[in-house]
Image (tube, rainbow over all chains, first blue to last red; front, side, top):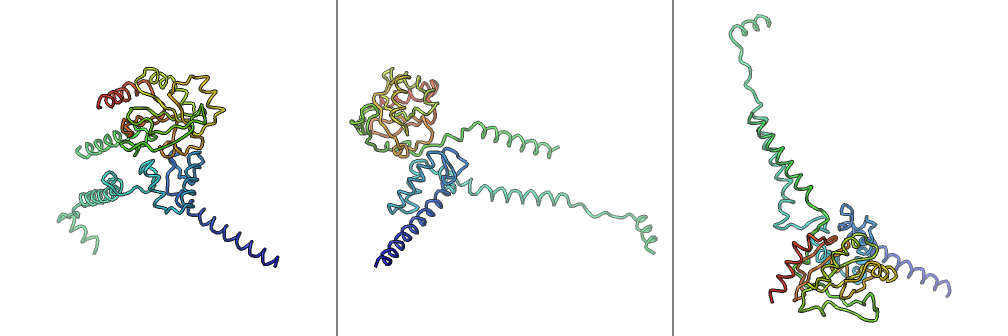
Length: 139
Length: 176
Protein backbone atom coordinates (compact mmCIF):
# COMPACT_ATOMS: atom_id res chain seq x y z
CA UNK A 1 0.00 0.00 0.00
CA UNK A 2 2.65 2.38 1.11
CA UNK A 3 4.91 1.57 -1.80
CA UNK A 4 2.09 2.03 -4.31
CA UNK A 5 1.38 5.41 -2.73
CA UNK A 6 5.04 6.30 -3.10
CA UNK A 7 4.94 5.24 -6.74
CA UNK A 8 1.84 7.34 -7.26
CA UNK A 9 3.49 10.36 -5.66
CA UNK A 10 6.65 9.95 -7.69
CA UNK A 11 4.64 9.57 -10.91
CA UNK A 12 2.61 12.62 -10.08
CA UNK A 13 5.77 14.54 -9.23
CA UNK A 14 7.37 13.54 -12.52
CA UNK A 15 4.26 14.52 -14.45
CA UNK A 16 4.27 17.96 -12.86
CA UNK A 17 7.96 18.27 -13.56
CA UNK A 18 7.50 17.26 -17.19
CA UNK A 19 4.77 19.83 -17.56
CA UNK A 20 7.01 22.44 -15.99
CA UNK A 21 9.91 21.70 -18.30
CA UNK A 22 7.60 21.85 -21.32
CA UNK A 23 6.52 25.29 -20.13
CA UNK A 24 10.16 26.21 -19.56
CA UNK A 25 10.94 25.25 -23.14
CA UNK A 26 8.04 27.27 -24.50
CA UNK A 27 9.07 30.30 -22.46
CA UNK A 28 12.69 29.95 -23.57
CA UNK A 29 11.75 29.51 -27.23
CA UNK A 30 9.63 32.63 -27.26
CA UNK A 31 12.11 34.62 -25.18
CA UNK A 32 14.72 33.93 -27.88
CA UNK A 33 12.44 35.55 -30.45
CA UNK A 34 11.97 38.76 -28.47
CA UNK A 35 14.45 41.57 -28.11
CA UNK A 36 15.43 42.93 -24.73
CA UNK A 37 14.84 46.67 -24.78
CA UNK A 38 17.56 47.41 -22.28
CA UNK A 39 20.41 45.51 -23.93
CA UNK A 40 19.17 45.79 -27.45
CA UNK A 41 21.51 43.27 -28.99
CA UNK A 42 20.37 40.52 -26.69
CA UNK A 43 17.17 38.55 -26.66
CA UNK A 44 14.94 38.38 -23.61
CA UNK A 45 16.29 34.88 -23.02
CA UNK A 46 19.92 36.00 -22.94
CA UNK A 47 19.67 39.30 -21.15
CA UNK A 48 20.19 39.65 -17.42
CA UNK A 49 18.60 43.10 -17.26
CA UNK A 50 15.95 43.29 -14.54
CA UNK A 51 13.35 44.20 -17.17
CA UNK A 52 14.21 41.07 -19.15
CA UNK A 53 13.70 38.97 -16.02
CA UNK A 54 10.34 40.65 -15.42
CA UNK A 55 9.29 40.06 -19.00
CA UNK A 56 10.36 36.41 -18.85
CA UNK A 57 8.22 36.03 -15.74
CA UNK A 58 5.40 37.77 -17.54
CA UNK A 59 5.70 35.35 -20.49
CA UNK A 60 5.72 32.39 -18.11
CA UNK A 61 2.68 33.63 -16.18
CA UNK A 62 0.71 34.26 -19.32
CA UNK A 63 1.61 30.87 -20.79
CA UNK A 64 0.77 29.12 -17.53
CA UNK A 65 -2.59 30.90 -17.69
CA UNK A 66 -3.18 29.25 -21.07
CA UNK A 67 -2.27 32.08 -23.44
CA UNK A 68 -0.89 31.11 -26.84
CA UNK A 69 2.51 32.22 -28.12
CA UNK A 70 0.78 34.67 -30.43
CA UNK A 71 -1.15 36.18 -27.51
CA UNK A 72 2.11 36.80 -25.68
CA UNK A 73 3.76 38.29 -28.77
CA UNK A 74 0.76 40.60 -29.26
CA UNK A 75 1.01 41.66 -25.62
CA UNK A 76 4.67 42.64 -26.10
CA UNK A 77 4.11 44.40 -29.43
CA UNK A 78 1.24 46.42 -27.95
CA UNK A 79 3.61 47.79 -25.34
CA UNK A 80 6.99 47.98 -27.00
CA UNK A 81 6.18 48.02 -30.70
CA UNK A 82 7.49 45.84 -33.53
CA UNK A 83 10.95 46.64 -32.24
CA UNK A 84 10.72 43.74 -29.76
CA UNK A 85 10.39 41.25 -32.60
CA UNK A 86 13.58 39.84 -34.03
CA UNK A 87 11.53 38.98 -37.13
CA UNK A 88 9.65 42.16 -37.94
CA UNK A 89 6.35 41.72 -39.79
CA UNK A 90 6.11 42.57 -43.48
CA UNK A 91 4.44 46.00 -43.62
CA UNK A 92 4.65 49.09 -45.80
CA UNK A 93 7.31 50.50 -43.47
CA UNK A 94 9.40 47.33 -43.48
CA UNK A 95 9.20 46.43 -47.18
CA UNK A 96 12.68 47.77 -47.85
CA UNK A 97 14.02 45.82 -44.88
CA UNK A 98 12.74 42.56 -46.34
CA UNK A 99 13.22 43.28 -50.05
CA UNK A 100 16.44 45.30 -49.70
CA UNK A 101 18.90 42.39 -49.68
CA UNK A 102 17.33 40.92 -52.84
CA UNK A 103 17.37 44.30 -54.55
CA UNK A 104 21.05 44.64 -53.74
CA UNK A 105 21.69 41.12 -55.03
CA UNK A 106 20.01 41.93 -58.36
CA UNK A 107 21.88 45.23 -58.55
CA UNK A 108 25.14 43.41 -57.85
CA UNK A 109 24.55 40.90 -60.65
CA UNK A 110 23.59 43.69 -63.03
CA UNK A 111 26.82 45.57 -62.30
CA UNK A 112 28.86 42.38 -62.50
CA UNK A 113 27.51 41.46 -65.94
CA UNK A 114 27.97 44.98 -67.21
CA UNK A 115 31.55 44.98 -65.97
CA UNK A 116 32.26 41.61 -67.56
CA UNK A 117 30.77 42.69 -70.89
CA UNK A 118 32.84 45.87 -71.17
CA UNK A 119 35.94 43.96 -70.22
CA UNK A 120 35.60 41.49 -73.07
CA UNK A 121 38.16 42.69 -75.66
CA UNK A 122 38.18 41.84 -79.35
CA UNK A 123 40.48 38.90 -80.13
CA UNK A 124 43.83 40.18 -81.40
CA UNK A 125 44.08 40.41 -85.19
CA UNK A 126 47.37 39.38 -86.76
CA UNK A 127 48.78 41.38 -89.56
CA UNK A 128 49.90 39.57 -92.76
CA UNK A 129 53.54 39.85 -91.76
CA UNK A 130 52.84 38.35 -88.31
CA UNK A 131 50.80 35.60 -89.90
CA UNK A 132 53.68 34.73 -92.19
CA UNK A 133 56.09 34.70 -89.25
CA UNK A 134 53.79 32.44 -87.27
CA UNK A 135 53.42 30.07 -90.18
CA UNK A 136 57.19 29.93 -90.46
CA UNK A 137 57.60 29.15 -86.77
CA UNK A 138 55.00 26.42 -86.96
CA UNK A 139 56.60 24.63 -89.85
CA UNK B 1 36.83 59.89 -65.49
CA UNK B 2 33.14 59.01 -65.47
CA UNK B 3 33.92 55.90 -63.48
CA UNK B 4 35.79 57.94 -60.89
CA UNK B 5 32.82 60.28 -60.54
CA UNK B 6 30.52 57.30 -60.00
CA UNK B 7 32.75 55.71 -57.39
CA UNK B 8 33.14 59.01 -55.60
CA UNK B 9 29.39 59.60 -55.73
CA UNK B 10 28.60 56.21 -54.20
CA UNK B 11 31.26 56.74 -51.56
CA UNK B 12 29.85 60.13 -50.56
CA UNK B 13 26.30 58.73 -50.48
CA UNK B 14 27.45 55.88 -48.23
CA UNK B 15 29.26 58.26 -45.88
CA UNK B 16 26.15 60.45 -45.69
CA UNK B 17 23.99 57.41 -44.92
CA UNK B 18 26.31 56.23 -42.15
CA UNK B 19 26.61 59.76 -40.75
CA UNK B 20 22.82 60.00 -40.45
CA UNK B 21 22.75 56.54 -38.90
CA UNK B 22 25.25 57.59 -36.25
CA UNK B 23 23.17 60.64 -35.32
CA UNK B 24 20.10 58.55 -34.56
CA UNK B 25 19.61 57.32 -31.04
CA UNK B 26 18.91 53.57 -31.11
CA UNK B 27 17.54 53.74 -27.58
CA UNK B 28 14.65 55.85 -28.70
CA UNK B 29 12.21 53.20 -29.69
CA UNK B 30 9.05 54.77 -31.09
CA UNK B 31 6.31 53.93 -28.63
CA UNK B 32 3.24 52.22 -30.03
CA UNK B 33 1.30 53.76 -27.15
CA UNK B 34 1.25 57.27 -28.62
CA UNK B 35 -2.35 58.02 -29.58
CA UNK B 36 -3.64 55.12 -27.48
CA UNK B 37 -5.48 55.31 -24.16
CA UNK B 38 -3.16 55.34 -21.17
CA UNK B 39 -3.12 51.80 -19.69
CA UNK B 40 -5.31 51.46 -16.64
CA UNK B 41 -3.86 51.14 -13.16
CA UNK B 42 -5.03 51.24 -9.59
CA UNK B 43 -2.05 51.49 -7.30
CA UNK B 44 -1.32 52.43 -3.69
CA UNK B 45 0.32 55.76 -3.06
CA UNK B 46 3.98 55.84 -2.16
CA UNK B 47 3.54 58.19 0.76
CA UNK B 48 0.23 56.85 2.13
CA UNK B 49 -0.03 53.12 1.30
CA UNK B 50 -3.63 52.84 2.44
CA UNK B 51 -4.79 55.24 -0.27
CA UNK B 52 -5.00 54.26 -3.93
CA UNK B 53 -5.04 56.16 -7.18
CA UNK B 54 -6.20 55.29 -10.67
CA UNK B 55 -5.43 57.08 -13.92
CA UNK B 56 -9.20 57.50 -14.41
CA UNK B 57 -9.24 60.20 -11.74
CA UNK B 58 -7.30 62.43 -14.13
CA UNK B 59 -9.85 62.21 -16.95
CA UNK B 60 -10.78 65.70 -18.09
CA UNK B 61 -7.33 67.06 -17.28
CA UNK B 62 -4.12 67.25 -19.23
CA UNK B 63 -1.48 65.70 -17.01
CA UNK B 64 2.00 64.30 -16.93
CA UNK B 65 3.11 60.92 -15.64
CA UNK B 66 6.75 60.78 -14.63
CA UNK B 67 8.29 57.35 -14.04
CA UNK B 68 11.21 57.46 -11.63
CA UNK B 69 13.13 55.45 -9.07
CA UNK B 70 15.57 56.27 -6.32
CA UNK B 71 18.12 53.84 -7.84
CA UNK B 72 18.17 55.70 -11.14
CA UNK B 73 20.85 58.39 -11.47
CA UNK B 74 19.32 60.09 -14.56
CA UNK B 75 16.14 60.59 -12.50
CA UNK B 76 18.15 62.72 -10.13
CA UNK B 77 19.50 64.65 -13.12
CA UNK B 78 16.04 65.44 -14.45
CA UNK B 79 14.54 66.11 -11.03
CA UNK B 80 15.09 69.90 -11.11
CA UNK B 81 13.40 70.03 -14.53
CA UNK B 82 10.41 68.01 -13.30
CA UNK B 83 10.27 70.23 -10.21
CA UNK B 84 10.22 73.36 -12.34
CA UNK B 85 7.31 72.16 -14.51
CA UNK B 86 5.34 71.00 -11.50
CA UNK B 87 5.89 74.27 -9.65
CA UNK B 88 5.03 76.39 -12.69
CA UNK B 89 1.49 75.06 -12.35
CA UNK B 90 1.36 74.38 -16.08
CA UNK B 91 0.39 70.77 -15.61
CA UNK B 92 -0.22 68.38 -12.73
CA UNK B 93 2.65 65.92 -12.47
CA UNK B 94 1.93 62.45 -11.13
CA UNK B 95 4.89 60.29 -10.20
CA UNK B 96 5.16 56.55 -10.78
CA UNK B 97 7.74 55.10 -8.46
CA UNK B 98 9.07 52.15 -10.47
CA UNK B 99 10.62 48.98 -9.02
CA UNK B 100 11.71 50.80 -5.93
CA UNK B 101 11.42 50.36 -2.18
CA UNK B 102 9.66 52.73 0.18
CA UNK B 103 12.70 52.82 2.45
CA UNK B 104 14.76 54.13 -0.45
CA UNK B 105 12.19 56.25 -2.23
CA UNK B 106 10.94 58.28 0.72
CA UNK B 107 14.39 59.46 1.88
CA UNK B 108 15.20 60.25 -1.76
CA UNK B 109 12.19 62.59 -1.88
CA UNK B 110 13.18 64.13 1.42
CA UNK B 111 16.67 64.84 0.09
CA UNK B 112 15.67 66.10 -3.34
CA UNK B 113 12.20 67.52 -2.82
CA UNK B 114 8.80 66.17 -3.80
CA UNK B 115 7.22 68.20 -6.60
CA UNK B 116 4.59 65.58 -7.43
CA UNK B 117 0.87 66.00 -6.98
CA UNK B 118 0.96 62.41 -5.83
CA UNK B 119 3.08 59.33 -6.44
CA UNK B 120 1.84 55.85 -7.17
CA UNK B 121 3.94 52.91 -6.07
CA UNK B 122 4.73 50.10 -8.54
CA UNK B 123 7.32 47.98 -6.70
CA UNK B 124 7.30 45.02 -9.10
CA UNK B 125 7.12 47.11 -12.25
CA UNK B 126 3.94 45.47 -13.50
CA UNK B 127 2.32 48.77 -14.49
CA UNK B 128 5.66 49.83 -15.94
CA UNK B 129 5.35 46.91 -18.37
CA UNK B 130 1.88 48.09 -19.41
CA UNK B 131 3.30 51.52 -20.12
CA UNK B 132 6.19 50.03 -22.10
CA UNK B 133 8.75 51.41 -19.66
CA UNK B 134 12.24 50.12 -20.36
CA UNK B 135 14.59 52.85 -19.25
CA UNK B 136 13.73 55.10 -16.35
CA UNK B 137 13.11 57.99 -16.30
CA UNK B 138 10.24 58.11 -18.74
CA UNK B 139 7.57 60.76 -18.97
CA UNK B 140 4.13 60.68 -20.58
CA UNK B 141 1.85 63.55 -21.49
CA UNK B 142 -1.77 62.43 -21.33
CA UNK B 143 -4.70 64.46 -22.64
CA UNK B 144 -8.19 65.11 -21.29
CA UNK B 145 -9.55 61.96 -22.90
CA UNK B 146 -6.85 59.89 -21.24
CA UNK B 147 -4.89 59.38 -24.47
CA UNK B 148 -1.09 59.34 -24.42
CA UNK B 149 0.15 62.19 -26.61
CA UNK B 150 3.86 62.21 -25.95
CA UNK B 151 6.47 59.96 -24.43
CA UNK B 152 9.91 61.05 -23.34
CA UNK B 153 12.41 58.24 -22.94
CA UNK B 154 15.25 59.21 -20.67
CA UNK B 155 15.63 62.39 -18.65
CA UNK B 156 13.60 65.50 -19.40
CA UNK B 157 15.78 68.44 -20.27
CA UNK B 158 14.95 72.13 -20.17
CA UNK B 159 15.25 72.08 -23.96
CA UNK B 160 12.71 69.26 -24.45
CA UNK B 161 10.32 70.91 -22.02
CA UNK B 162 10.55 74.25 -23.76
CA UNK B 163 10.38 72.97 -27.34
CA UNK B 164 8.03 70.00 -27.05
CA UNK B 165 6.22 69.60 -23.78
CA UNK B 166 5.13 73.16 -23.03
CA UNK B 167 3.75 73.83 -26.53
CA UNK B 168 1.98 70.46 -26.53
CA UNK B 169 0.37 71.08 -23.14
CA UNK B 170 -0.76 74.56 -24.17
CA UNK B 171 -2.22 73.12 -27.36
CA UNK B 172 -4.03 70.35 -25.49
CA UNK B 173 -5.34 72.79 -22.89
CA UNK B 174 -6.43 75.21 -25.57
CA UNK B 175 -8.41 72.65 -27.57
CA UNK B 176 -11.34 72.29 -25.21
